[in-house]
Each structure stands twice: as structure tokens, then as C-alpha cells.
Length: 169
Image (cartoon, rainbow, N blue to C red; front, side, top):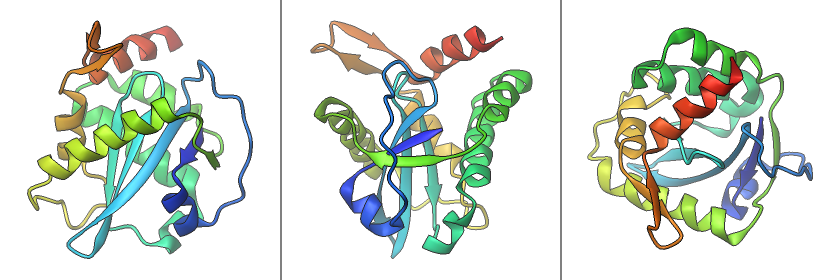
């Protein structure tokens, strides 16, 4: 899993940056965060499907084992989304390590910014305080239509993610 972070996210995590070609990579994600109620709200967005995973209340120390953290968050979000558990397990079992890099291009950063904007509108303070994963917020993002090429192509991120997951089998 390769997570391409905004400059703000890189400044927060201070990870080892790895340059990797992620064109047509199903395991490529973009990440950013903003503060809500003095805690950080993280959004991970898959590059191909625009499927989002939301985490809340994490500190820098929580990123010591990012492979386990992100694999668990993706699995929980997919399970709450209603995907078959073998599909979600097949995806998360292929996450062997997490690497970090800089954002790829402006188009994907703009898509991530749009997801962050939508997330800021849909988080009404209804966070699951005892868990970092926030699948109820991710469901709202993933069940909202997104468009490409000035809305000539539109789709729902959860449906597109399901199509790609079925290709893994």
C-alpha cells in the first residue's frame, strides 16, 4: 500500500519518502487531515476508485505500525459498507507494508480536497470516540456520486471499489 500524502500530512508524520510509480495501482491512496474538536480527522482516498476511509483522533504515536492501522481501517470500512468479507479480506491480506510518498499530480489532490470538503460538511460531531475508524462518515462519502471530465462520467465510489475487488478473485 502506497500512501501519497499532502505536504501538511508529510510534515505531521515525517516518514521516509519513497518514490513509486502508482499509475493504475489498486493499492495507491492519497491522504490528508484537518482538525475537528482539537483532534485530527484523517481521510484516505483510493486513487482509482475514490473510495474513502476515515480515521479520527489519531496521534503521531498511533502511526508506529501503519500497515496494521490502515489494513484494519480499510477492512472495517469495507465490512460496514456491506462487502462480502472474503473480498475485504482478500484486499487487506495483500497489504504487506505501507510506504509513504509525495502527492502524484494536481488532479488527484483536487479530488482529495473535494473529499475533504465533503467530509467537513458531513461530520456533525457524530464520532465513534472509542475507535479511530469512522465507517459511518466514510459511508456518506462513498455513497455520494463523484464525477470526472466535468461530470461526463459519474459513479459511486463504493460501486467502483466493488468492481475492482471482484477482479482480485
